[in-house]
Length: 302
Ligand code: FES
Image (cartoon, rainbow, N blue to C red; front, top):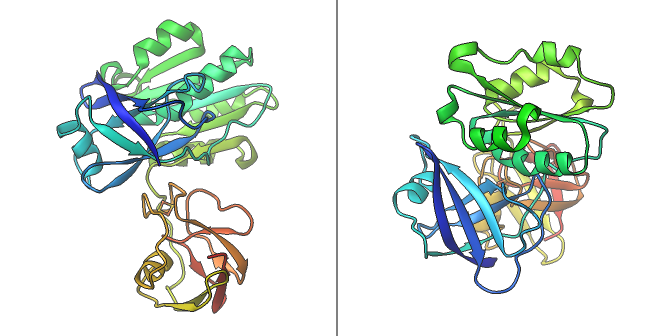
């Protein structure tokens, strides 16, 4: 954990507030565009937010939080109770959405999905790499940072007010995509589905802030062997690996519990996991909050 204090809370739209989190001492851990952190909120909830500031600013992080009317307590706490001056522990940055070197980029943002793309666009433009941002939202005044982006980047940014002009035509964008250009997309599930339909998988990098709706086979029981600490944990069909480990006194960090943040990552030494996350588990890893096992036994580096 790193220790920060809420220095500023700037309202950027009616329902989005941008937080500047200043280190209480020294520098904060470095990060690259696409990274996120967990905020450990005073109401005992951990919530993940993309870093949207400048990686060169080493003693502060910036995140933006949209108020969710269906909030499970995170955005509601930030909007209703959090105030400047409050100390806030934050995790080290994690990055499951890195900017891969390419000769050009097309960034697609929907609503609050703009946040991880802000530092990406800055990095790409600063490096002189041809880039376009297509930023969609119901109306300009509801879209965080829209005016700032337009002022800073001019024609590089295309604002699409879907309430007036409809959704951007991603198939048309795909038809004119220059060779080698990569597509980075962050937004609601409908936008991600449209991007998956329009762009080849090898050119599309997407980040979800809600898990995709997918179906899996029935949950079955399996055994998790903890190779380092010794002992085995039975994982019943109606319990997650994360919960079974916690009940056995081997808790893992957990933020989203939905397979989108990466905080519960664990190394698999033997056995075959069934990956159910939306991150894309690296080889030999799994996310214990949602993923299960195909084999009757998993050996974990715990
Ligand atoms: S707790 Fe977020 S991926 Fe498991």
